[in-house]
Structure formats: structure tokens, C-alpha cells
Image 1 (cartoon, protein in one colour):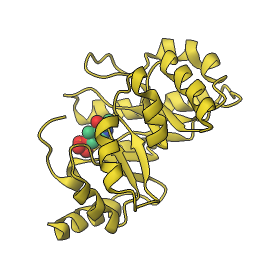
Image 2 (cartoon, helix red, strand yellow):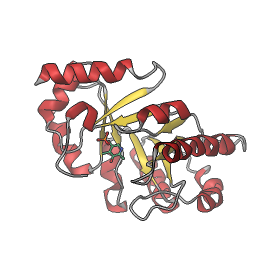
Image 3 (cartoon, rainbow, N blue to C red):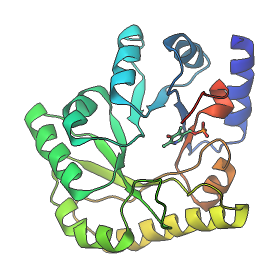
Image 4 (tube, rainbow, N blue to C red):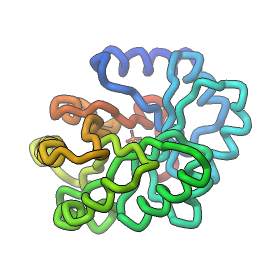
Length: 224
Ligand SMILES: *Cc1c(COP(=O)(O)O)cnc(C)c1O
């Protein structure tokens, strides 16, 4: 079983240029499989639930050079735990949450890396900033001095065809470029977190710098 995992990871790594970071999405995956992926060279893991991640992190505490990425929706009441257990939060999707993370990070003496999750197309199932709201919030986000706002994250709506998916990724890159051209003091737009098992090639073509891949590494999950 570990041999299969090694082959799958090697195949994906061969498909990803060196400048693109592979985040292995380990939600619903036991700590033993995470450890195997670590042995295969993975150092970045993505989880969508804070509580589930904390339990597995305790089992993997000896693997000190893992970078943990929170990629799932974050409730304000879990913000503190998210900050103490993840170096990256990809799923910051509203100003209130960003400001809460900023003030908590200040208290905790942390400077987490975050992505602003955006919704390029209307999607009832996905969290994310609408573009108008994001532009209105940028001046406030730029004042969050404890956050390292690194770029954008997006998840295309379900059921798009290839061309539509490519278009979502291209428009996300264009949005990042447009924001970057406004030369904010703190906000950086150097990272684009986009692409999952089914669409990471399209995302990389559009300029993704981080891909979040679960199923193609660990196999099918029960749900989510
Ligand atoms: C589950 C998940 C992924 C990984 O999806 P796969 O299709 O299993 O590769 C990526 N990003 C987010 C936000 C996820 O929730």
C-alpha cells in the first residue's frame, strides 16, 4: 500500500513544475498515511477541519518540519486554535475573520501566512469573497499588520467543463495581478492556491503556485 502511495506521489510530482508547491490534502486520512507521505518526501499537508488536524498533529509531533495548511472554512470560534496549529490559512473569506486572526496573531506573537479565498463565479456551495466586497475590504486588509497576506485561493464551482474551469483559474490570476498593481503596503499577491486532483493541470497553466491534492495521492475519501 505504501508502494502505491510512493508511486502516486512521484507521478504527481513529475507533473508539477518545481516552483509549484504540492500540498497533500490529508483530510479524513489517518496519521499513518500522512507519515508514509512524509517518508515519500511530502512536507506540506492540507486539512479542512481544525479539530481533526490537531488530533493527527499530536500523533505526528516528531515530524517537526511539516508545514500545516488549513484549507477548509474557518469559524471565528476556532480562529485561535487555527493560528496555533497551522502556519498557513488558505480559507480566509471575510474581513471580520481576517481582523480577528490579525488581533489574535498579535496577542500570540505569530505572523501567519494567509490566502484570501475568492469566488469568481456565484456558487452557493463555496465560501469566498465576492469581488466587489473584496475590493471594498482591501484597504482594511492592508492594515492587518500581523497577517502575511500572500495571495488568493479559489475553488471552482462543481460541474464546470474544462474551458469554464480554466476560465475561473485565469480570472483568479488576473484578479491577483489587478490587486498587485494597486501597490498595497502589506498585501502581497505572489501566491495562487488553486487546483485539486481533477483540475490541477489547468490551475498550473493559469499560474497556480500551490496545488491542493488529496484523492490522487491518498485515494478516494468517504465524502467531502
Ligand atoms: C478536499 C479539498 C481538496 C482536495 O481535493 P481532491 O479532489 O481530493 O484532490 C483541495 N482543496 C480543498 C479546499 C479541499 O477541501
